[in-house]
Length: 261
Image 1 (cartoon, helix red, strand yellow):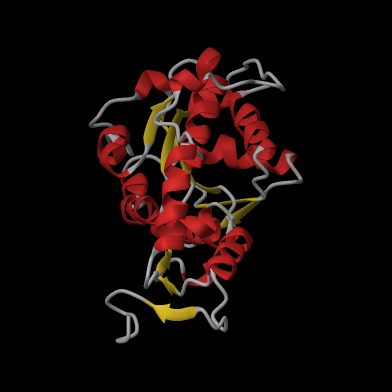
Image 2 (cartoon, one colour):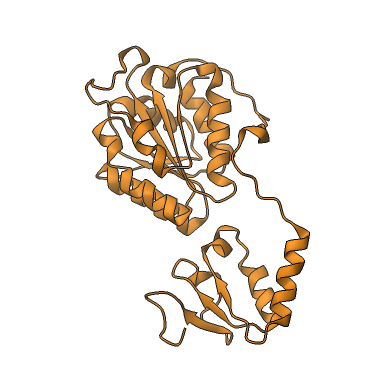
């Protein structure tokens, strides 16, 4: 299968149902190939920046991996704001950038720009694919980085010829954990210390942040609150992590929050 098919098979494995984007020259092979994958729907958005924001919002609302696909150059630059938004919101988002053919890539060519350099400070990881043999491993690691630890946006840049080039796809590919960034390891001692602080506190107050939603731990968080009887204050991004009508919900904290908190 070609590079586009390899990428779409990986996205299908990660339960991606929608790809948002803007149809254009260097991304055409990938977008055209989506038609061969009935499980995945491409949604055309009127401009590139809006496509990025729609993908980020979808990922944040659904808890699923968001994907946006657009062409390189000035079009790719339109993703700067939504990618930074995803970084601040810890939203898992993959930006697929269709680059010019490998033999035509320059920093000053038509419809070209240094996407890797521009997006490096506002993503968790960026990858330019230069070899079809490394395609699957690079993409699998990139998506794992986006979804692991503190989630966030990543950028994948693929030249047009590699989108069409034939390569191998391994069904049960395993990502080497040593290639990934920081891993979270639960420390039982720290957990016990935190539990002791909560139970011994005279006037406890527990914050419900976005991490509760990212971890899909709303039920467990509610159990913790009801077991300890501790009141809760929610951050703006964590406001849906705890029932608003619950008697222990003291409301919203922060600059837009309730004065009582």
